[in-house]
Amino acid sequence: MKERLVQIESDAERAIAQSANLRDIEEARLRFWGKKGELTAVLRGMAALTPEERPAAGQLVNEARARIEARLSEAEARLTRLALEQKIAAETLDITLPGKRRSPGHKHPITLATEAICETFLGMGYQIAEGPEIEIDHFNFELLNIPKDHPARDTQDTFYIDDDVVLRTHTSPVQVRTMLTRPLPIKIICPGRVYRVDTADATHSPVFHQIEGLVVDRGITMGDLVGALSTFAKNIFGEDTKIRLRPHHFQFTEPSAEVDVTCWECGGKGCRLCKNEGFIELLGAGVVNPKVLKMCGIDPEVYSGFAFGLGIERVATCKYNINSMRLLYENDIRFLRQF
Ligand code: PHE
Image 1: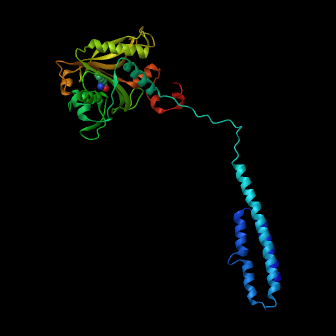
Image 2 (image 1 turned 90 degrees about the vertical axis):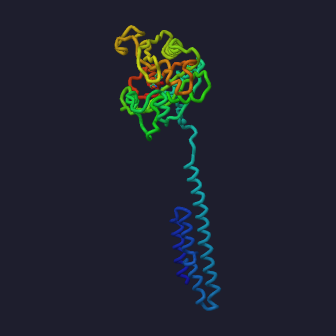
Image 3 (image 1 turned 45 degrees about the vertical axis):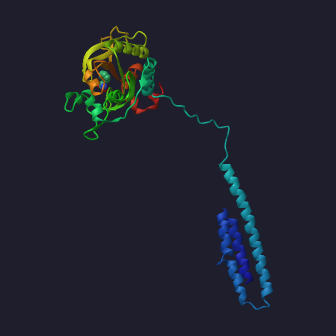
C-alpha cells in the first residue's frame, strides 16, 4: 500500500504541475478524490487490513492526502490569481489612444430641396397637407378628371394593387382629399413620394418626390398663380430668376401651363444647358378645372383656384447642379458629403 501511495502522490504532483487552469485542477481533484478516485480506492482497500495494521496505514493515507490537498489548494490559488491577472490585462483600456469619431450626418439633397421649397410656401401662408402613398384610383385619377381608359392615364402608368387601388402617381390626390374635407379657403402644399412605371435613367425613377400646391378661394386667377410661382422661383434660384408659361394640357387644370425658369447657368442669355432657350422647364400648373371643383363638392360659380406640381428631384438636381437623378438614390457617401 505504501508503494501505491507514493505512486499516487507523484502522479498527483505531476498532474498539478501540468495544470494550466482551474478546470485542470478540478479534474485532478476528482481523479484522486472523486467517487472513483485513486485515493478513495486506497481508503476503501483499508477494510481488508487487519485491525493492527490499520492505524499506521490510516496515518500514511491521511498524510498523503493532506499533502496532495495542500498542493491542490496552492495551485488553485495561483491559477485563480493568474486568471484574474489575464482578465485585467485583456480588459485594459488605453485612454491615450485616439478616439473614434462618429460622423454627425446631415440632410439628403432631396430633404434639403423639400425643406427649401416648403419654407418658401410656408412663408406665403400655405399649410402642409399629407396623404397616403397607397391611394384609391378614384382620388388618384377619377376625381381629377382622368376617367378609366382615358389616354392621359398612359403618361402616369402606375403600379396597380387591384382595380381600385394604386400607388399614387402624383400628389394631386392630396388636393382632392383636402377639397373634400377641409373648409374653404384652401391654401396648401403637399410634399410626398409618388410612383410611376418608369425605367430608371438620368431623369426618371419609378419612385420620386413631388410637391403640389393648391389654392382655392373666391376670385383666384392665373395672375395669383404667376405671383406665387415667381416668388418661389426667386427664392429657390435667386432674385434675378424669371418664370415663363407655355400652354400645355392637364386634365385637372384649364387653362394649363408648363412653367420654365430662367437658366441659372447663363442667366437667360442662352447656353448649352438650356439649349439656347434661356429658360429651363421646371413644373406644371394651371387654373383648377371647374369640373374638378364640382366633383370635389365646391361650387365653381363662386370659387376658383390654381394648382401646380413639381418634381423635387428636378429642383434638387437643378439647384445643386447634379447631372443625374440616379446619384440621389445610390447613397454613395462621397456624393452625399458634398451637400
Ligand atoms: N399632377 C401633375 C403631374 O404629376 C402636375 C400638376 C399638378 C400639373 C397641378 C398641374 C397642376 O404631372
